[in-house]
Length: 204
Image (cartoon, rainbow, N blue to C red; front, side, top):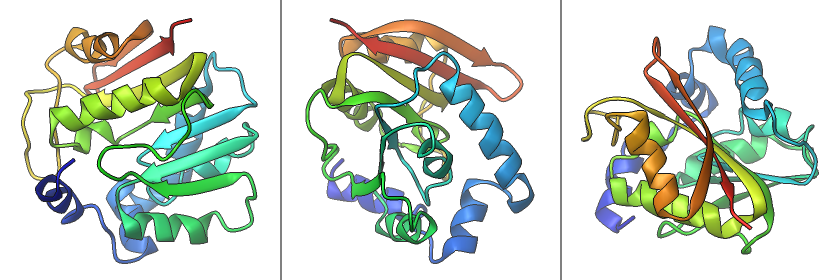
């Protein structure tokens, strides 16, 4: 992500405070209920323990419950303010580490992560090349047979307000995983929300 792309993204996704950040992510009354539902969906069929990494962790909404299912959890985000708020929110959890994504690179060792996940993030990335870079980085950091489960939004490609690059079909989104060398093992399209989910594995 170049400086112009980063500035365009942070103009919206760099909240001032925790109430502001929470409302950007989910309405206050839906926060706890939706979080529990999301964790169940993310962990379905995934072996707990080991290490997990979230792309676009925000203030740590999902990292907190995930910290109870994995030995090590890493949260990455491009927003300095989100990471600062996440540090406060997750205070006391010794198995959670936070770090910035810089120049599209994940500051994580190669082949060190068992599970990579991301929810309500890719649909806000304006640039397809950034999505492709994140998926390539996902493959790099996953251990052999490690799992990635990532969600985005179905629609016409192109930026619109805070929405980013959409995919016209599940096939188009799944192809991005295949193109970086990940093996797609499960797809799910939630028609009422126009959500696309891909679960992929790093091949041996």
